Figure 1 (cartoon, rainbow, N blue to C red):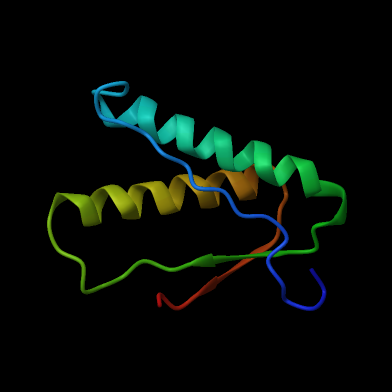
Figure 2 (cartoon, rainbow, N blue to C red; figure 1 turned 90 degrees about the vertical axis):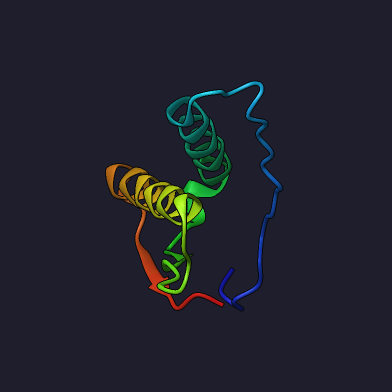
Length: 88
């Protein structure tokens, strides 16, 4: 909100057994995030998205980077302004 408070949070869980391939798993996550944003779209002036960690290693770091950019693409396609903040 205007006071920099979190207005919604949700834990999105996926299990490899349900999504044995990564692409459907990513689509589920991106679509879930999109549906959350759609609830507030009329009042959103901008969002913050955490940047990619450069110290991450291994396959999961590639997957997290891909997911990060898929979310950014969704935001761009839906005309949602966002800024990238440094990883915590």
